[in-house]
Length: 232
Image: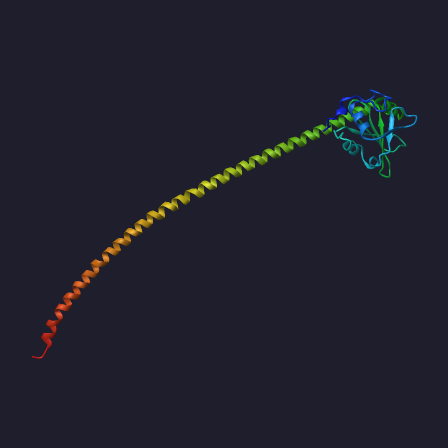
């Protein structure tokens, strides 16, 4: 979008020949490059800036911190190189000649200088400005649509993130419940097993005692058997 600078508050002054013959944006552009008036073309200037010769109007304006969506329209003139008109807010603008070798020749125009040049080329300024306004409106609508698409995408991303967070929370809850059950049940099962083991251990002496009694009885009967089998 167009940036604000101290010079943007003042109307066009330039070289003081055409004070007020343009707006603050034209004055700002005047301060960014060196402009020389074209002979016998009042209110029209050209620049010897080498870099500008390889820049489109939009690239040049961006470099000069005038990168708002100023509409640039093509002006068709028979027998002439293609011409691009970029009108700046408040009056005045650029007429750029697009050479076949890729060079751009930018001319700086006050409002009256621009009107005289277009009239000399038999181009209706009102028609050009209407086309420029239509192009600017189209650009603004496209920018708004892109912003709405970006906002919708951001909202969808936020919803997906919330869903993922809820799923993660549910998974954490499910993980916590089995853990608690496993912590309690094995302990209870272990206690039961321990009790059974105690019972088994307690029953061992009883069995041993019974066997011991049988052994004593058996031992007690042996002498009688031996005596009875001895020779008389």
